[in-house]
Image (tube, rainbow, N blue to C red; front, side, top):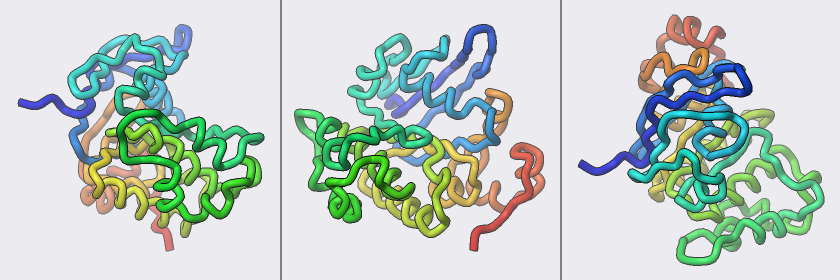
Amino acid sequence: MADPLLAVEGLNAYYSSAHVLHDVTFTLGNESVAIVGRNGMGKSTLCAAIMGFTPPRTSGSVKFQGTELMGKASYKVARSGLGYVPQGRRLFPSLTVDEHLRIAVRNGSGGWNRERVYELFPRLGERKRNGGAELSGGEQQMLAIGRALLGNPKLLIMDEPSEGLAPAIVDTMVETFKKLEEEGLAILLIEQKLDVATSLAKRQLIMVGGEIALETTAEELARDTEMQRRFLGVEPVARA
């Protein structure tokens, strides 16, 4: 039996004495998976633990295509085939769009290059000489995604990609994610907006208090308002 693309088992994470992740366990194949939950549930810490960022202090296992990633430096994790789009984009205000992409290009084989990123996001091509701080929120998110794609990842981890974006821009992003998935890119989506999470991924993992409290489907989560209230603590609100 082939190894899953990503296998997280018994993952714990700590910030000093604070125990944030509690034995998180899940697998991901060649499909999109969404992890949903309220703020403060440990979702971003999970991203940091998978990608090898410090802090947090971690224990457990994170395997990618059967290879253990725990203990590896973050740049080695990225080179193993994981791309990361962080919450808040984390762009350099003084660098232009094109400079961001140039420093992200990796040598070697792979289908992604700057020209292909500009084809995917024509708006970036129009703004290639503008600095990161001069871009709109949607343009910054395009750039953050394009930067991650230039590593030619097999799995793209996105932390709250819809944060701060207008609904029309979010719709465009979801369609872009679907296009990337159709091309064979697996996506791990960290999100608190239900409509975004359920639009992209059939598998939904609900995180509560640093644990995976429940696995369900997009269809079930979208229609079960009691589940939404119980695990996410909010009334469901549909976008126009």
